[in-house]
Image (cartoon, rainbow, N blue to C red; front, side, top):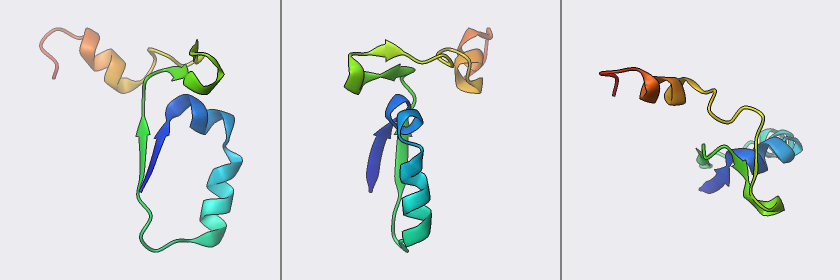
Length: 63
């Protein structure tokens, strides 16, 4: 199981190519959408607050 932040994944997209090449049969990837690149000091990502989940939170009555 790979636990990954969205910012780190954006900064290291090449890692997805290496994973695809290895094609592990039992790998599960969990990406945390916190809108930040924490490794570099917590800088916000350009897409922060723009995901469908973020929009649902702003919609009255949405879950």
